[in-house]
Length: 458
Ligand code: TYD
Ligand code: MG
Image (tube, rainbow, N blue to C red; front, top):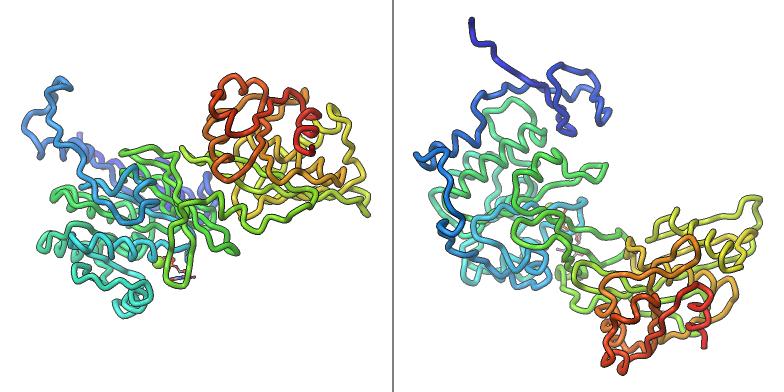
């Protein structure tokens, strides 16, 4: 029987695969995005294995496998290094992603300056001309003689250059603008993005050169050509930030060489991104004094506690249905807290508009922020000022109880460091707080929401 060629149809937009062609993708709903792909009977990984060693199917004891340790390059931006798990690992492939204009090119050019002192760096840009990059580099003060700029979009030419020149670090800005000319699909399509990345990766791994790839985020917030890239690369970093705020948060969503919980905080200035080593202080800047409806929360971002001000505003409504609005906190979670406050605490919000805002654009995703949200709202409802040297955290249960949270001591230490004199915490957490720490700051354990309110006003 003749060998039948197997093929599969792949959606260019989301990567959905199906043996049949569709006009409209059942997963993402985009029209005319299916492309046929021939399936190679022998998966790439196997052919690679064959070529790498003649010993297929041989298992080794883990203690016998030689490891020459991880060699890491420090970038000079400690926040960037922290997110990577302690610098760029030699031979790794890192994807840096984020909205347009968020600062991806800026941060990479800054990294070039420090690394360029000892290493040879190739910065490939398919988006900007060498002249444009030079203008930006002047602004950022990047003038290292070891930084080479290449304005090129053909992946094969780029890889030829990498082979002949052997830089110590390669930056590709961005993967959506480079292409393999032998493929028929257009620049930025799923096939192009995946195959280009594979091509670059093979070249880089052969010479053990680390590569940072910039990937754009599409309108749904996914990296265009999304999941396929996340599987290929060793680390995926996102830069986030609100358009109206200057600060940017760098977050790892995948990291084969470190934890994914860490974040790095930066501030966008005229001369590039500056590290923010004390984010809590920045978040609390300009806090109003003697004003009701404000309470400080503590949220854990990776191994680091960050303080943020939660503001609530409760006003009589002039509508039939009172308005509810949140910014930086989950809308449904606020409604739940309001319901608990009504039912269990006797605080009535029925004829009130309720607005909640987390200052600085930070998003409080942890349930540990519940207590400060509740206190800010009650403080505004009662028009009672929360003492400005008090911080509160704890999860609120539906029975009105305050439930314990993780990393209690770390949160209290951060409060102490920033000059707070009293913390209100869940009662169940109290026993885990050391006596020494309790000498430095007054720690009050509360079981119910009403006790918490008493503890923050006098
Ligand atoms: P950029 O790094 O080009 O974003 P991306 O590569 O993620 O698309 O950042 C561009 C934005 O940053 C632009 O809106 C201007 C601003 N910016 C500054 O505020 N200060 C600076 O020093 C630089 C270089 C850019
Ligand atoms: Mg850019």
